[in-house]
Structure formats: C-alpha cells, structure tokens
Length: 349
Image (cartoon, rainbow, N blue to C red):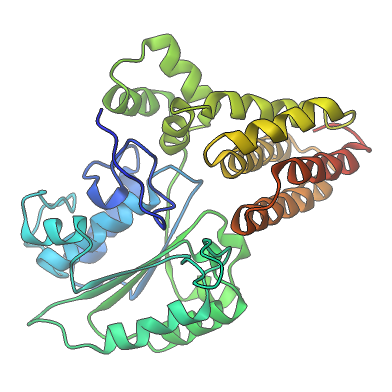
C-alpha cells in the first residue's frame, strides 16, 4: 500500500493508511451507526453527539460519516439508510480535501512559540466555533464541528464549549470524540446524546485486517488482533515500524513493575529516542495495556484498583507532557517505572 504523508496535526492518522476523513467503511459499530441514522433521517438530530470508545475503534470515522451525510443531504431521509456518501459526491470530495466550508475540525494545534504540538486543546480554538456557527450557510445547509478529542480540552476550553452547548445554534451540530468520557465535565456530557463504540470482536478484527493488511497471514493477523484489544487502529499501528516491539515492552514494564530492570529501562529509553514517534507510541501502548488490565481486574471484582487508576492518569499526563515538550525519553520511562512500582507495592496487577 502506498504511503501517505502524515500532516503535522493529524494525530488520528496512522502512517501509511487513509485518514478517517478519507475512510468510507465503518467496521463493527452497527448499533451506534443505526442510532445516528435514525436521528438524522427523521429530521430530529441532537445539537451535539458525544462519540465515545477506546482509541482506534472508529470514532473519527463515524464522525466524518455523520458530517458528510449532513453536509450532503441535511437532516432528511434523502440519503442512504447507512449514512454513506459516495467518494465522488461533491461534499465527500470537499471533506476529504479539508475544503468544505460547512465543516470545522478542532484539535490540538502547534504552539507558534515552540513549534511543537500543544498538549491541550486551548480555549482560542473552541472560541472559533462562535464565528463558524454564526456564518450564513447555504439554503437548508448545515454546519458541523468535530472536536477531536474533547479529552484534550483544558478547563477554559471546556467551559467555552459548555456555553456553546447551552445555547446551540440552529442547523449546527457538534460531534465530540472522547476516549475517556468520565473525565469530561458532567454538564458537557448531560447536554450531548451518546454514541458508544465498542472494541471489535475477533471476526471484525480479522475482516478489517484482511482489508488493510492483505499480505499478512492468518497467524500474523491473529497476533495483531490479540495485542490490539479490539482496536483496528491499534492493530494497524502495531503493524507499522516498531509498533509490535514497543507494545511488548509496555507489557513487560507492567509485568515487572515490582522489580524494574534499570539497565533495560535505560536501553528502552535510548531505543525510543531513535524511533520516530517512539515515546508517543510507547506511551499509548503502555496506557492501553494498563487500562486493559484494570478493566479485566474490575470485571473480576478485584479490590484496590484505585491506585492503578491513579497511576494510569499520571502516566497519560506524563507521556502527553513529555511528547508535547519533546522531553528526554529515558527520564520519562524511568518516571513511569517508578510510578508503576509504587502502585505494585501492594500487589501486582
């Protein structure tokens, strides 16, 4: 498959694969898609949808699918029941080329002072919505804004978005993407309708991997699916570059949390320094692996998980800060290992 260049702020693009705005198939999320279709085609869509689910399960793909339909057909039943819009449709072409005047995408931006991607979605970005929704749209036209992700908003940005939700304009829709909706303001959650996306089952993962990785055999696809935990995005990331090795290192760090190997951690830090986006990828894999283990223990009724949940929150913040500020990977890895070691003192996860 031909490589596509990754744009600086396309945080949801996996190198070598189509961006969600260029993706027209949505795997394994029929319930959420059907609910969205009912609201849109009946002419009574909410002013805001909160699209939730783990990273890589299709949240952005669903958001762009909804946006394309609204921009092509409005809140009517004129389009297909599955909200599909063919790639050759003018609205689809404009969305794919980031040129549709009725669509705005809010996400973390590059800080002009540092030249680095910000670690937060700042209030100035959210304030752009007022002018965008206030612009005159075409006859019967809609304006759609995608916030990718709402989890990235700082407090000021969240409060500015809340004001928009409290007084929603007509013929306008907000699509908020969230990996961890419980961390959003309750008032934001209460003003949105939920579209919950779930991890893909084994059959859907295999179908998606056959489509995207036709050269992989069944055993290789199965291994990717197990590591990815139902996330097609995670599986594709694992399949590129050093993804698989970094995922294994993340599992090893958690397994040996009670007695981390200092030399191995320093070696890992050096490897992350030499790997493109290595620190960011490792942080994502470590957070995902830890979250999976916490969920499994919670389902089994295990006590004492609060310390692990707190450790997960600190890990996500620490790796996000380190990536945004381009900090030295070895120190970040050592700090993560120390944090996990403290959490493991009363028992491994």
